[in-house]
Image 1: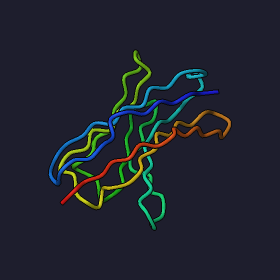
Image 2: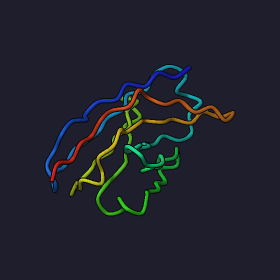
Image 3: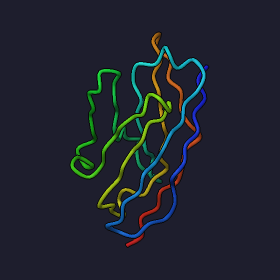
Image 4: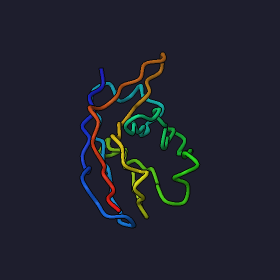
Length: 116
C-alpha cells in the first residue's frame, strides 16, 4: 500500500504561480512513476504531468512551458510547479503514483481555482 497526501491548492489569480506537493509513504520502493491528473467540471480527466524513476518527464500539451514536475526522493515528495496559471487550469488535481504490477494509487484530490 502507498499513502498520498496532497497540499498546495487554493484560489489564485490569472498569471499567478502555485506549487502542489504530494508526499507519498508506504511501499515506495516499488514505485516507478509519479504524476498529476486533473479533472475539471464536465470535462474528461487529463494526465497533466508524469515523472519516471529515470527522471524523464512528460506533459499535457496545454501546460508545456508553464508547468514543471519534479520529485525529491529524500523526502518522498513529488511537486507540480504551475506558472502563468489560466482559468482553464481550474480543476481538482490528483497525485497519482504507479507501482510495478499495474497498481495505481491516487490521492484525495486538491482544488485549484484560477480566477480571471
